Amino acid sequence: MTKDAAPKQVATKLDVTLLKPHTHAGTRYATGDKIQVTEPERDWLAGAGIINKPAAQAKEGAK
Image (cartoon, rainbow, N blue to C red; front, side, top):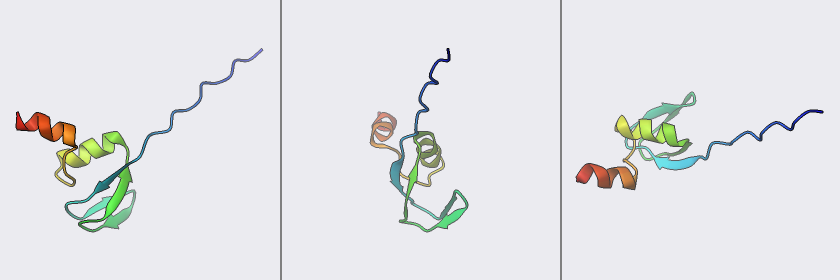
């Protein structure tokens, strides 16, 4: 008897707007373009100044 494998979790994609040109998944995007990224990608992009920080992080940084 075999057990069913646990279902794979699908990463939620978030829409972000670029503040500067950026290459994502091999495609070059311009300032103002919208791309879909995972939460860790969003956090990295925000830390690099490529997108605005998410609202929750922006509030924490203002304290």
